[in-house]
Image 1 (cartoon, rainbow, N blue to C red):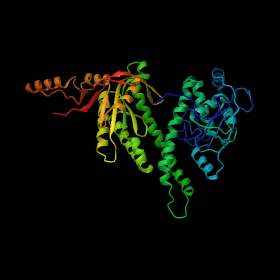
Image 2: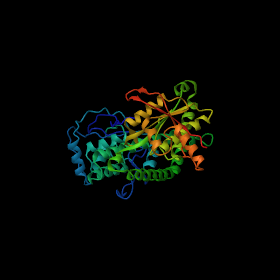
Image 3: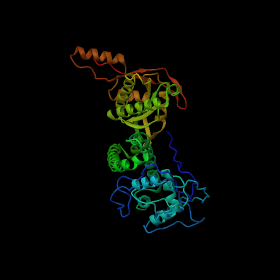
Length: 446
């Protein structure tokens, strides 16, 4: 969980390179990437996805920034002056593939033929070499020098990003973040689809057929359906995220919010990696991640990310986070193939960036997980106070028993506490000083 904002593309940081090996259509939502698509009507047709490797290189050292026909001279000029970078010599060893099937698949996925070198694409989009280079690096693409490997879709993606900057809708750093977050997210999605989904479906259906003979028609059938589904899910997630933000109490809370953050960690996973075969280990991790994702979503939390043997989730309130944690432990206990689970949760101010969460609250939740007993949930003092404040847990079990007895005597129902809290010994936690963890459990219902 680091907020590292370094570029992911290979090569020098200046305007001489434009990165890489596209994992998926970073800016694509729908369409075939052909020319003539309206820049304002719909999300950008596929970006540089499917292109094997590409980069922008200045045609000659010291060349001026390119201004083009798209009217983006403002974006181009500003980017050249605000972010001056020297040009560096780059060893362009990553050439685009010339495999006929790979090229046919690329054309099918992108909906366009290779037409431009990186320099030509930047010029056609009306974007400076330096700004185009930064966009492509942010999306995670490596270098190809000046090979003719880009399409109309790549030009359109550049034009749209630069247009958002020029119109003042996004700052240049924010546009870079959009490119980076989209590239990283779709890269993982595309890798999963190829490794886990298409690999199984492209098994030759008949003896004598090769996988390559099956791949093209299969992708041709799946592409429009997967594309539409991707757009649907993205819009749903965007609507949910927007709803959470606009309900924030003030502008500051939109960025730095008070959340419950939980880590759930499989106990003894390192030993399992030495004992299980790779396929068995992969199935165990997939089962754990699937179970965790389903439970977190079903009970109103948000899965931030999965780390193999660990998941990180967040919830708007302590009660939701508690319910998720205890149900995760129950689910692992009910599966004989799963190891024990331990969970740590903290409550407090959290900074959100690019779908991830950062800050002391997140670090504390991680530390609590590392000291939690197996099949148990440890929470920090702020989380315990929040459960008590909302009436989800009693301040003390003794007082709760007295209240229940008094209510029963009066013929009334006792307070409906859902959780029990037991204070643990104070202990030092690396980097965070002394903390007093609380053991969280489900309270028996009368």
